[in-house]
Image 1 (cartoon, protein in one colour):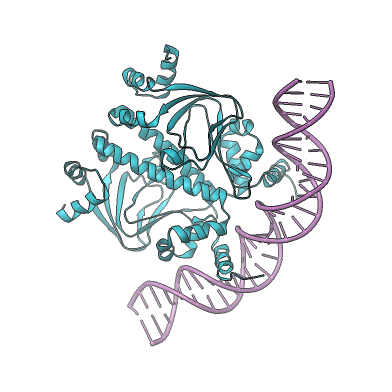
Image 2 (tube, chains in turn green, purple, orange, brown):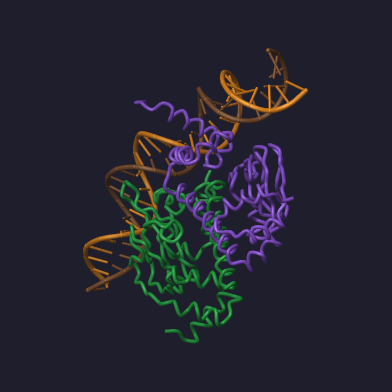
Length: 197
Length: 197
DNA sequence: ACCAGAAATTAACAAAGGATAATTAACGCT
DNA sequence: AGCGTTAATTATCCTTTGTTAATTTCTGGT
């Protein structure tokens, strides 16, 4: 279930983690594969697992009362993903998590991982770092919504995540930016025509 | 510096914290008072303290290139506050933190608190809880920007934080919602005139 | 390579917000 | 209580986005 390639893979990613701590954690983990288009976490489910994305891309979306989809978040390789509603708010997931590409995950049951993390200072510190990184990311988005126009937000996204922009259909990027696909199309046109008086 | 009133005050707030852990933490803490209007953290400073707000209200704001202020966050009693740039991103603060009311803080030097938290499982868990709460709050805001119109965001704010709405001038609420004060005024008028055909 | 379905673009119109400025209301200070 | 400052509202005009629908382009699967 666990080979030396895996171990070195994770050790390079989680710096400061001792081999024994890593092995204890890996004993709880298992691999899950998703094909492009597969649903990873269904709406209203209570999914108590935390996953590390080895490869691929997952979008978290929601259905508006009107019926159309709104993408709230994208996560890709080397990032963690979990049902926020289930793990943080302890409620059934309002969101749907779908793989946009063939995806490979390393999953851990959160209820099993938690006591291990509590009792391992290194793991506590590591979890803390990841939470801080996620918090910084989320606050950065709030800042963008407040400080930038939709057009500026799109330019920022292209600048900061050019690879992701190319891997995800525009209609998902649009709602992620808080605008409609039609509006994003117009923005792209404006940008492509720089000298227009 | 530390009396039994203080201790019981914090013990009721930080559930599960033992008295010995609490005292260890309090030894590092000190009280700071701010008058309404005072600047708590200046722009470009590197403020390595984390504060618990006992009383009062603080806004975090930024200056746009155009020169006008944009409020990004409000924090009030029983919440923690710190310079995000300094603590999380380890960079000088782009933001200014200002007390909008007479405010009383309990401050701790983050660099002193960190080793204590790392070595005290209860404190680690507590820190983790606060981080999760902040993360949930921040993601809730992102969700609002994506899912709701400015008018709906204002209504949500009034519904979820009626007390805060009444304590803060509209011009700060407006930029917090990502709109201009003029636009908020129009929204308020629309709401006040329900049956308008 | 083709073809069907999906995505992206374009168009036309309505609705809302941004900018600026003037006016009115509210507030804080002595 | 009065006065000066600040906040909030209102008005006007302009820009942008939302909505709906039609059209074009792209894409994946056979």
